[in-house]
Image (cartoon, rainbow, N blue to C red; front, side, top):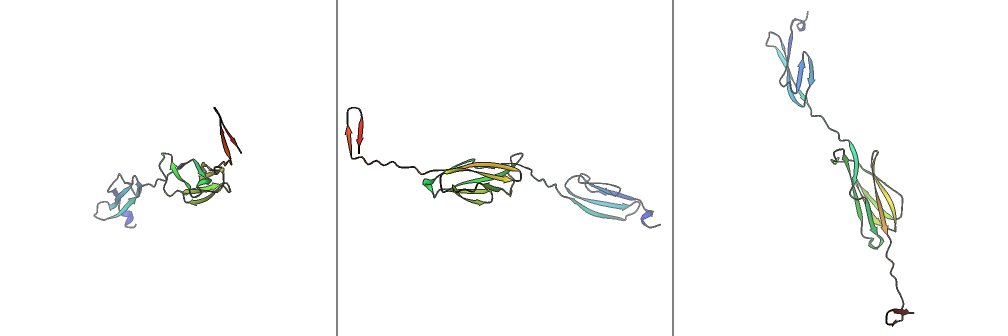
Length: 173
């Protein structure tokens, strides 16, 4: 017989709301810290260990992508102007998911010069036209339409004279 076989052991937890113990089986109940003590019954012989139960990590589940704009309008008349769309990944309670990676896709075009920077995409007008841009995170997508308007055409007339009558104006070359 060993010394181990000659004793019965009593197990206890300093905080059963954190860790429970039944014989030698320890079960985590909630996050926190508790001390487990095992005592040889009928003696002052014991040993202890500290058990730390970490708080559960909640991983947010992405639900949708929110875009700061779904329609972007630019003009060739203002080539120095730009427009930016920012994408935010949201969970089912519409809480932003920080550091979420957004991938941008768009048609190869000569309508706008495009710069991406993480969750933002910026457009600079080149020529008139319309195209679609898509923000993606896994299977979640959101789209926006980008339109660049043409330069306004100025009409110039080379009138040499104006003839006025009672109710009309006649321009002649």
